[in-house]
Length: 151
Image 1 (tube, rainbow, N blue to C red):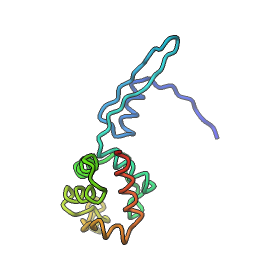
Image 2: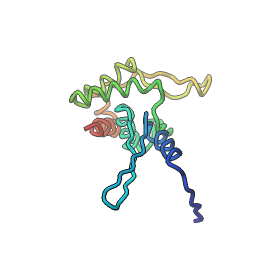
Image 3: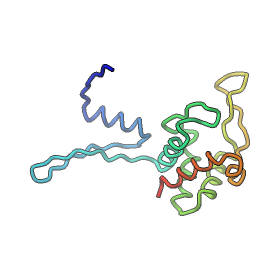
């Protein structure tokens, strides 16, 4: 395998971190302690994005239909994941947090593309927590991982 080494500056590194993590801000910090210098980045990530990233990781980056889940939440999905995160941070169980997510999504999840056009998604009624645990335990486990990521 051939590799190429590339040097990037802190501004580009900050932009890449912000994009890759779905961060709202990135700050580069340089600290001097005695004769040593340390460099680190402080990253602000919305709690909904943190939970979603854990869910995505648990699902292996794949949606229920096998399509790739995006790394960063879309603007229309952020309120639902923020509702999930807020419920988790209020020390509710994953079942209550999932219900908050569903309420923000009005009880529906995007489904498969319609035959009319690939951009148009069918909306399907999302399963409640008990149904999800009984019929799709792997997905319920991913939701639990999302909740645990906020602890």
